[in-house]
Image (tube, rainbow, N blue to C red):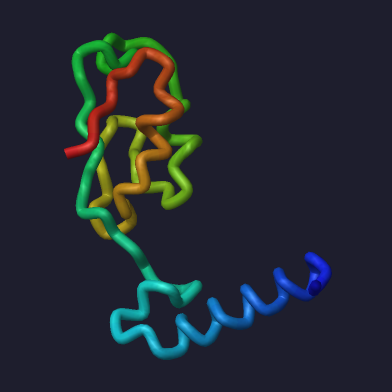
Length: 94
């Protein structure tokens, strides 16, 4: 029986082969995946209530949310990190 490190090495090698032949490039590490979902902010959002809360902006790995909650659609990929970090549940993705 193979040891675990050999098994993992084979698994990663096979994944790389899949990435090479994938016609959509979905498995390529530099593939710019976009869910086409964008954050929508409800009235529960603290920024809309004139309070300070940069959590969604800070959590966004694409830096797509401005301080006025405008979304840069060229940067946003719909990952949902903003929604996950919002502790008042003011963000939905649509």
